[in-house]
Image (cartoon, rainbow, N blue to C red):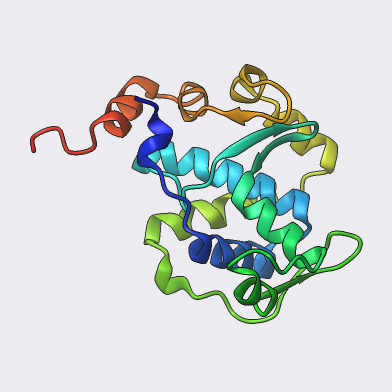
Length: 179
């Protein structure tokens, strides 16, 4: 059984994640937001054993991209109304032709745990000012290299880049071992 079967993408939390990062990032563009989510998710997996909003990552030319979040950003940017969450997303943030993301309202932090906020804030602080090239280099890690271009990166591969990978994989495989 793949680890991905137990993970569910939460589009409402993804919208709030975009808002959270866009409202405090020094470079709130699509690229920096996607990379902040990747690094926040990696830290959250390592320290707390779960992803923040259950997104899956695709190995794209410029590094790992959170698929659901990227789709929401592109839907708003390109005015693609087919997504069920388009209305909520388009009234929450805007994306201009230069890929700059602007929050249109405050983030609803009630959807986040303290650990979610901690990891998102830490990712923005640590990676928010980095150049495109630096982020690209940092995100081209072993997980990224394990996947074919434009294909999903397995959660196993991401976890295997983390300290304590064996314990994290065990937790993700059986989060309630005594039940």
